[in-house]
Image (tube, rainbow over all chains, first blue to last red; front, top):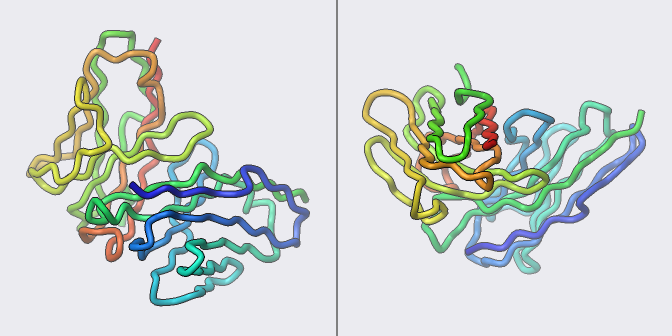
Length: 114
Length: 116
């Protein structure tokens, strides 16, 4: 199945600074890459996703970039705010199983220091 | 439009008992996925169901675990004869379409199972 690696595992930034989280995947057939934000005691919330026909997608302070050649994709959060503090997960589909399920990275705990 | 609903939110079971977890997908969604999350880890796929059909159960243990999504009512994940290693958060996600390339998965709040 797909192998998704995510770095860093923890990230602390000052409020207003940018945060970047990176993921790599193994299955070159994967074509959909979502990012989820999980706050303590809650379920993962889809915050942005990208499909393989584009290299970058932006939604206000959040952007995702995709490099299919290198098989990696990144989440960029600009002008970070304390409410951005959470665990962020990247994911990629299991193409070999007909893309029915997602394989998740191990998560990045982001702390935004006021 | 209500989101994905899961109940109970917390469940405590003694070893050997049965755990039954329920998931009601978002309105209009007919595709349900169950994932398990151990502490400090990412989510691991267990099973994918459509109404009255199990489509992919490749991530679900062969013994003690079963899932269903009946024509009427919520999807149920059942764990029989629970053991301490079953303690985890179980998340349900729903999607309007089959296949991740078309159907974004939206997650419920999860059920936190503790086996004592």
